[in-house]
Amino acid sequence: MSNTCDPAMRDLEANVPSLKRTLAERMLGTLKWWVGILVPFGVLGLAGWILPLPFVMEVLIFSIYTMACNFLLGRLGFISFGQPAYLAAGAYGTAFYLYYFGTDPYMGIVAGVLAGFVVSALAGAVFVRLRSDYFALVNLALTVIVFYMLQKVLAPITHGDNGLWFLDRMRNTPVLDITNPRQLALLIWLVAVALWAFYKYIDGTIFGACCLATKTNEDKVKFLGYNDFAIRWTGFVLANTTAALAGSLYGIYFGFVSPEMASAARAADPVVVTILGGTGTLYGPLVGALAYVGMKDLVSRLVGNWEFFVGLLLVTVMLAGEKGIWGTLQPIAQRWVGRWVSESRE
Amino acid sequence: MRDVPWSGTGSDGADTKALVVEGLDVSYGDAKVLFGVSLRVEEGQLVACVGRNGAGKTTLLRTIAGFLRPSAGRIRYGDVDLVGWKPYEIARLGIRYVQQDKRVFSDLTVRENLELASYATGDRNWDIVFHYFPKLKELLDRKGGYLSGGERQMLMIGRALLGNPKVLLIDEPTEGLAPSIVELLRDVFRELKKSSSVVIVEQNLPLVADVADKVYAVKEGRIAAEISDAQAIKGHAYEQYL
Image (cartoon, rainbow over all chains, first blue to last red):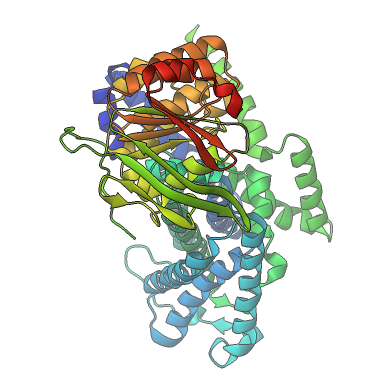
């Protein structure tokens, strides 16, 4: 943690002489930190000029959606089958604003994020007191409730299964006009990079360590003087507000939302993608989203039941060591990079 | 929720505080485990609780640390009644509990484990930890899950030392450890009581006889004996309680 950039812990190095690093070491650390962010997303950004734009946008949005699940599962130890509920909260927050109140898509995104924050803050106050299987099931129940509310109870304002169409209600925006698909893709790319940097930063802070410690042994977190409930609640709200942001971006991207977004049938998707990419790893959500959306878009053109291949891939990945695609590839990549660096030095 | 600032750091020693347990009854459901347990730990004292497995020693420590709520009795630290306080509030008061299980945060490095304690207590000076356990300095970047039992115990006690704690509650610190580590802990305990009150639950009788200022023998959930005379502590036949 003190190797990264948590301001509260920087003075540790001043107090503990053995932890002091040279200026060169600090600069190298900072450089590696930014390279680690910009290279993968830069590659994907460039791929946007070669690959179909909708494919790249969907990968990016799905990676944001998976970041939330990755944080819950990898950092807090929560397996949640309720992600579609938070995704739908964000999407419908945006949709309600753009359908009933305004035309500015940026304000629509803000409305979606706020809706997700409120839903997750209220649900979190109750849900994070539960652990493991009960937590997973109560979240699944929330998904079912949200789906039912959107489809039936709130049908007069959600239009039920017909959904809400607002694509033509969004007005052009200055600077980055997100009614234009290419500029929307740029916004989604920027949001994904910013969120990824944010989660990478969180990983290096005391809060990130507290989350991981809570996952390992919450009793010991209490012994240290931390309020474990506050840690779990904050992490839960943070993750699910991220899922809501993904929902909001989906809404803007399609210009349409329907209760199908909160379908319990899709509840396992983010969990599967998280495990596929590599639970708790920083690149996992991006790699998992790429594999999942790739399967869906490319394999489905060749064969009908693409889910069969995702299942097969998941089983293979699990049998290969439960580390996910990135978790398995990372040591190999590190060895290659290490070998390349040493060869180039010689 | 009580707003409890960390009170371990900055103690000037002016206010003498004793940890006093009076008539403590604790149950797990219908099963009563502690029956009217009373003990007193003066500032700077090392108090040992001995007794066989299942006597209620760990339950006593867990109750003081706030994990179990007594059905009767009081736990006072200075003039504060701790019953009903949450574990993290008690920790912030400067009463730190080191569990028996020797499990550290396995996904975090030694450095990160110490940083967690540093941040909670506001004490960023690790000299005291390295003074007692210099080996931890070499292990800073090793993950908790890859430490030996002795190293984990060092880390757990080291983590509890940050923030200049007022009272340390340590459960079976030498259980399953190599003799060299037990020797190290013996020296640590001797020094520790100069700065903090310490309560240890221990079955290593030579260690108890060597470092304790007072011994409580716990038998079937009751205090069977209280030995506070230095000579008596060294010569007592503790085996009868094991």
